[in-house]
Amino acid sequence: MSEERRRIAPYIVCNEDGSGYADIRIAAEDLIFYVDFIWQFGNDVKITGPVEAMTYMKQKIESMRLLYC
Image (tube, rainbow, N blue to C red; front, side, top):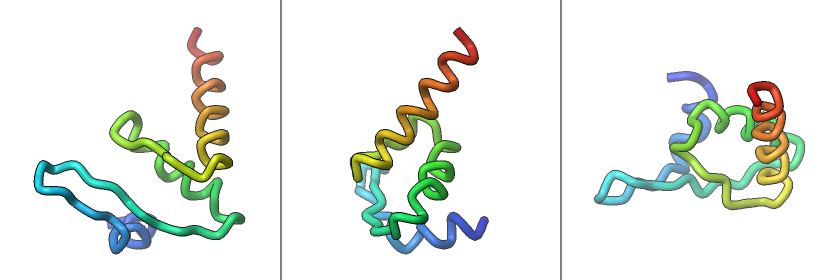
């Protein structure tokens, strides 16, 4: 297991149906690190906050769209 996955594993809550979520508080200066980490999961995850994380993810998605469209 990678260091990143070890850091987030204690915060993952699994539901009986196999779905789940991570309820984790991170320092503002670590926001980009964690959004970049989440990027690898593609559409299997959704960021619900904070707004800054959602904005950064949208910027990454738009950059990829422009690259391939």
